Image (cartoon, rainbow, N blue to C red; front, side, top):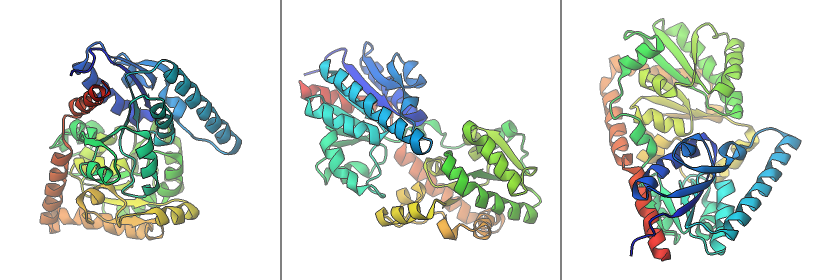
Amino acid sequence: MPAKSSPQVAMVAGETSGDLLAGLLLDGLRDKWPEVQSFGIGGPQMQERGFDAWWQSERLAVHGYSLELLQKILGLFRLRAELRDKLIAQPPSVFIGVDAPDFNLGLEQKLREAGIKTVHFVCPSIWAWRANRVDKIRASADHVLCIFPFEPELLAKHGIAATYVGHPLARVIPMVADKQAARAQLGLSADDEVLAILPGSRSAEVKFIAKPFFQAAAILLKQRPRLKAVVPAVPKQREKIEAMARECGVADRLQIVTGQSHAVLAACDCTLIASGTATLEAALYKRPMVISYHMHPISWRLMKRKQLQPWVGLPNILCGEFVVPELLQDAATPEALAAAVAQWLDAYSQQPQNILTLEKRFTELHESLLRDTPKLAADAIEKILVAKG
């Protein structure tokens, strides 16, 4: 029995990344149902595809301190309650929560209890350090759309239905990037030795990570006259990054650009990079990297207790071994970071087979993540609508 021709789809997507994911999902839904109606909380990518944004995605962003942060969180509770009541009063065909698990899982649970089918897009990292979320996912989502191939089997062990739909980044990033074109875009030459420095996109990351990264860059720039260090800065963090570069005495030696992280990764020979989604982007560009992270000591101790795997960086997690080095917390000294980066840069001339082996491994990873995400996600949602009857 086919699903009804024009389903009504309620969605909530948080932050820029969620808006991008939801935009891809809407592409698949519109291909399957040209007259699909979609509404809820979303951003510009979703609105370009006809999404009716009752509230903007940026409302879900939480930042600030003390009273400001408390007021923001209380406001999100009120927003979630208002949206919940509105959807229960006029039930959609399905609700899809895109990422933002702290907001979406609680909402999905209430909607599901009211008889509304619920889908969660992007499995929370229960395989890394959020194992306590399994029960919450099972209570909240009728189905989970997964971006990593090992996740459906893991969820199935906990009685949670899921479908692997591929990772959207694998469609965005070319299998073979044009390094020279990216260098031309950034004003770099073919003969330059290029290091990409990505200290994170959040304020706390810049605070704790940028300084040792820039201190490591200072060491490398003294040792390697051909080296060019490029920093793609998120617009909101550029001022802080420039201040940190001045403090470390490398402001005149770093090329800081606004955005353009993909161009910088395509152009580089190696990247010194904060743990997070950017490490997967670097792997898809087939670039050697040194992964690092540093946070407040109390936060670090709490995270270490929850860590379920020996790896922190996504490339290592997905490959199941340390294919690239990780220097975390106290191990992330400027000297150690510089030495690890130098080892990769030297490998191009001294151990080229190591570079080729890594590129082959990352190509296999890219191929495993490359799927028709919009279609697979829409097909999974259609099955849910059919099951609903």
